[in-house]
Image 1: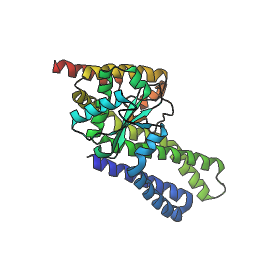
Image 2: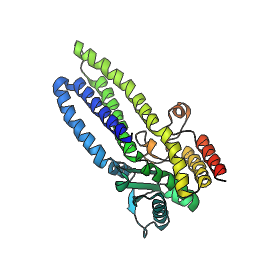
Image 3: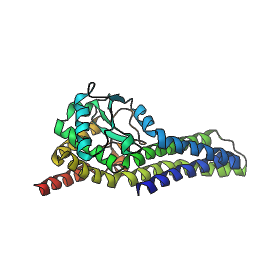
Image 4: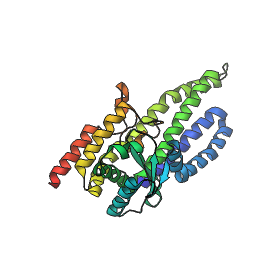
Length: 283
């Protein structure tokens, strides 16, 4: 299923580029856009994890440079029967974490200094168990490619806006292009949000449940979610944007007003409730 989703997302990216290429340069523009989309799909599969990590200036660490973080990931990887992922640290006091990579054999887990300093070891174990559940489910490739696509959609929408502001007028083709650009300008942010919603919401519940099983600490994960959510609402993560918001364990963007309707994550209260019910059943 995840393979089909990956193919679908890459196809969406190609269609978008072909559409924009036609708007800009007709058939010749479509030809250029076709080769450009092939390059983007190749790059998103092989290198998008590196792009995301570089966006947040994440630095790879080992046991000597970050013993607490590294040892927890090591223990959980063994518990989940997964290869040891690369471990990264992001210099940011807002607690959050995400996983990325194209497969369990090429996975990376990134955590902020804030989450390492704020959470207890049990809570950190619950959070990292959640991220390793994404690795185990092979969600990480879809999430990383989605980040690339959403970023691309946002870029296309911005380019459409500039084209409308500075594009020529006076011909029916110009009028058609203006209408198409306006349509794209309105549609692109909506499409990006819907894409994130479709990918993120259901898989977070699953990652919570499996992460709690990997760490054996559902209540610790529930406690961690409370803490992380509270801080992120007060002080959103630096450099966080809509393109990568769905990758984090908690939405790193401040949800105010209408933004709450387009959250990339299920409600924290519902996630906590399910974890507490899970702990009660385990008894």
